[in-house]
Amino acid sequence: MPKRLLDQVLIIDIEATCWEGPPPDGQENEIIEIGLCLLEVATRQRHSKRSILVRPEHSTVSPFCTQLTGLTQKQVEGGISFPEACTLLQDEYYAQQRVWASYGDADRLYFERQCRQRQIAYPFGPKHLNIKTLFALQHALTREVGMARALQIQQIALEGIHHSGADDAWNIAALFAALLQKEPTNPGKLP
Image 1 (spheres, rainbow, N blue to C red):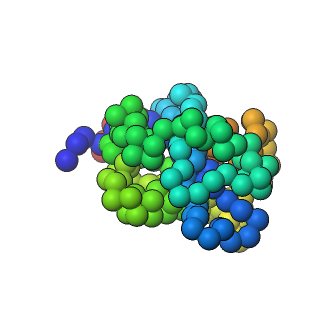
Image 2 (spheres, rainbow, N blue to C red):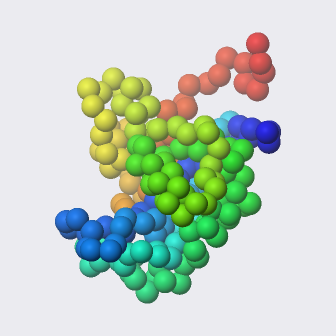
């Protein structure tokens, strides 16, 4: 088992093909963008913001999807394949060894389903943090709220464009950094 890396958390936000209603016949929701950034645990600094465009195999980008995400069919056709994206996450971001986080479970479930359907190794390790749930618990909310609302509650300005994978990952990292504000009693030392 590879050594677990706890110095940074890999923050992920995906965008997928979508339609106003159900998918057209023969199409399915597929990951078309993996937005990510790294959050340094000790300093709570965000860095390495990136957008990885992923070429869909079984769907096309609808006008609704373009309106929501800003992504066009032409842009994603220039992306990399899903297996290449999974390999990139492992090789460049050590996704198997890092704790990773997303806002809610949807991103994790998309990855699990798409990996299973394509018979591709899951790129992440077993340690996933659901920041949406953590935020609701930290703020004693009666229900989970969307990312934009959480930013308002935390009084953090939304940076970039909502539903851009890279911008959303950046904003999710800001929320998570705020949740990590409490200083540890013995930084870096085990009892």
